[in-house]
Image 1: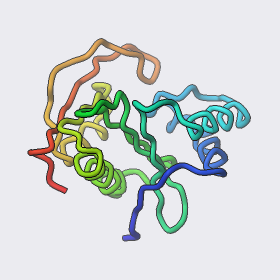
Image 2 (image 1 turned 30 degrees about the vertical axis):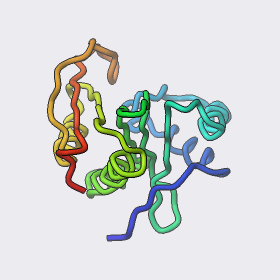
Image 3 (image 1 turned 90 degrees about the vertical axis):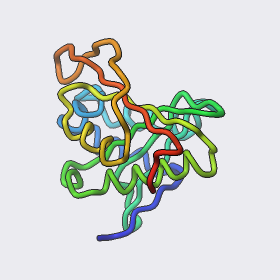
Length: 168
């Protein structure tokens, strides 16, 4: 299997992200609004790449020189952050790339960033994301407020992972 790397977002990535945004399944799985124009999606991504503040880090997931997704740490403080991840093309789903990229981001979170805890939230019906978090070592930590997901209001399950329990 080809090596994955994490890297800062760069010029041209907005075009790739806009292509992902044309896929309804991707949009619904990741909380994006389906049917947005390429122009709107590119403008949004240019804003993300320009930086959304010190409490947010988004890195591109690259395989063989090609951007295939992204991973986030949001609500960053000195000690914690909230993990997120998305693979852009459904053909890349279910093959271990999310697990590999997630481990890279968590190693960055617990290593250079020095975080002690990383949290995550997942919509209850999103079985793939629950499985990914468990593979990464996250444990259930309660429920959040229900949110819209794929057109209906669903429970949100919370997870957490500590530096001491993370296995790279």
